[in-house]
Amino acid sequence: MPSFSYSAINAEGSQLAGELQATDLAAARDSLRGNGLLAQWVEELKAPAAKGKGRFEKGVKPKSLQVFSRQFATMIEAGLSVVTALVILEQQTDDDALRSVIDEIREQVETGSLLSEALAKHPDVFSRLYIAMVEAGEAAGVLDTVLDRVAIQIEKEQQIKRRVKGAMIYPTVVLTFATLVMTGMLMFLVPIFVKIFDSLGGDLPMLTQYVLYASNAMRHGWFPGVPIPGIVFISAGVGGSIFFFRRWIKTESGRAKWDAIKLRMPVQIGSVVLKVSMARWSRTLSTLIASGVDIMRALEITAQTSGNWVVENETENLRLRVQDGASISQPLIDSDVFPPMVSQMVKIGEETGELEKMLSKVADFYEDEVDASIQALTSIVEPLMMVGVGCMVGVIIISMYLPMFKMLSLVK
Image (cartoon, rainbow, N blue to C red; front, side, top):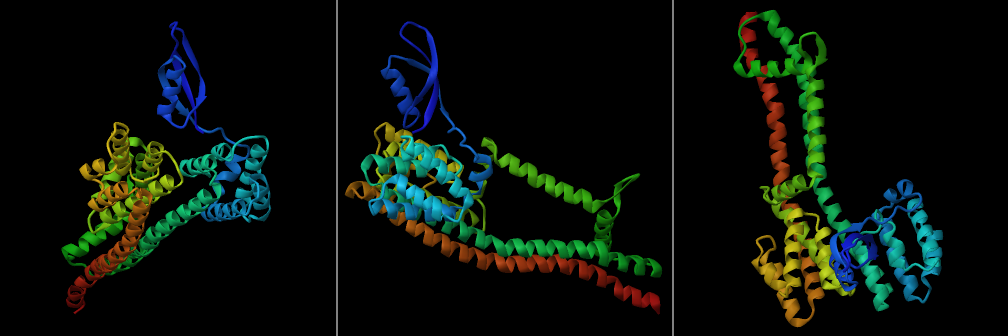
């Protein structure tokens, strides 16, 4: 369970500070109010780092975590205790990083901690989604079922990531190859033609002059007395732009703007981004509800794991309206972010009492849609990339061949 630090005033007007445990921020404030304290501020504390965290936890692979969850569920279902199952899992896992984490979790469970509390001490390995589901499974006595659902959730998330990454491989390789070819031609091939042109004299076509300017800009220094080729400045500029862009999108304002831009990108890119977010959103909320997590906390966790700031912000607005007594479907219907299919399926799920099943169907639909959209996007991107590469290389070749006719007349 998350821990919160607080500053509050008691009935006598004295200021107090301390820590408490609660399911979420609202529950922490309610707990203080119930003890006669007026909260000035309440802030969630990050789980303390476990020993060896920096060395081990960042190396745990999602596949290893999926296998761990699946085997853990099987052992609990077979009647083994949590400690016994952890001992076996620690011995048979091939992931050294995960073995270290399991060892620390086992020690904490043996000393009396709940499994969810032990998992919460490793936030870089176990997400809030994972911890919340385990906590709900412990409370309902269905830990094996919940762990199995966790394994399915991890598997689905990895499938989406593999699809998106697979679609990016071809354009990235082609673009990199084209850039290297163009750079090589400007750096090494064009100078050979320059010497020939200089020896023969005469005026060069305008296109050829522009290519020569680009070649000189890459080969020679830009500043007097600084013998550093222009390619170094260009590379530094590109690298610096990428670095500062990545820093920018990690800021709150940068992430908000970039996520909004991604949803509006042309050539079906924005559509794919939205479908990926909807698949992840629906799958996460379905899994949490099916595991018995409270709807308010389920919406909070779903927002944080949606992967897009726009969807996250819209889900937070949804949570606030549900907290005020609204149904889940009505805010979705009013939203400009969520597609009509999501809101209508959620509405049917609420009316029939099978919300988690409807959300699971929505997730399945959008996962299939992601596959179809990526294939369609790839079929569009491939010819565009080939045309782009042909134009880049063709411009240089044509610019070198245009003076050939003039060279022939000069030779004569």
